[in-house]
Amino acid sequence: MADVVIRAYRVSGYVLGPCPKCTKESRGLVMFEDYALGWECLECGEIGRADRVDWIEGSDPNAEELGEGADSS
Ligand SMILES: [Zn+2]
Image (cartoon, rainbow, N blue to C red; front, side, top):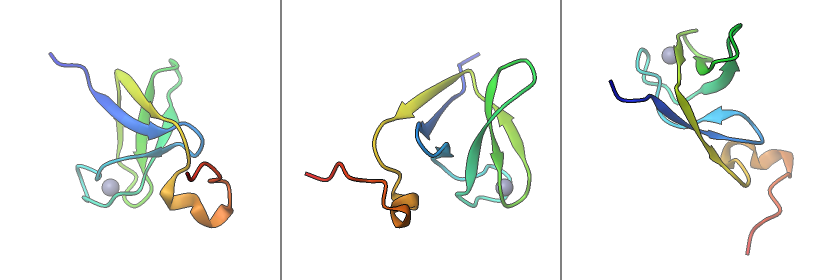
């Protein structure tokens, strides 16, 4: 069985890609009680586990309003 890999911004914890249940792109990174990583949908509450997280460095375009993204070239 293939590993489930999610892509997430290290700083904000925003998880890329649509929720498989409600198809909205508003998933956040969560950690389960056994320290496994996964995601939770902020729209419908669906959760899922991930075997690996592909961390994205740099600013989250969804959080630009916070003024944290200063790595523009
Ligand atoms: Zn959802």
